[in-house]
Image: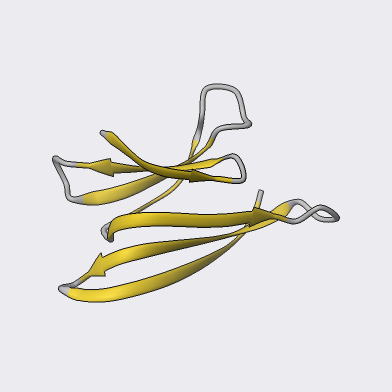
Length: 76
């Protein structure tokens, strides 16, 4: 896997075997996987909530042959 980018303690990794993207939490020990998607992401943006156990992460890339921006609202 290769690093796509980081944002607010999250990292997006491109899995060249599957063509998908894996998002991990760099602040947690061992960088656990938060989620995987079949989107071929080229960029990540994110922001952790300062008053709640959550975060919002946006991935930019291609999904199903179309350019896409996908927003994930996480409770972690």
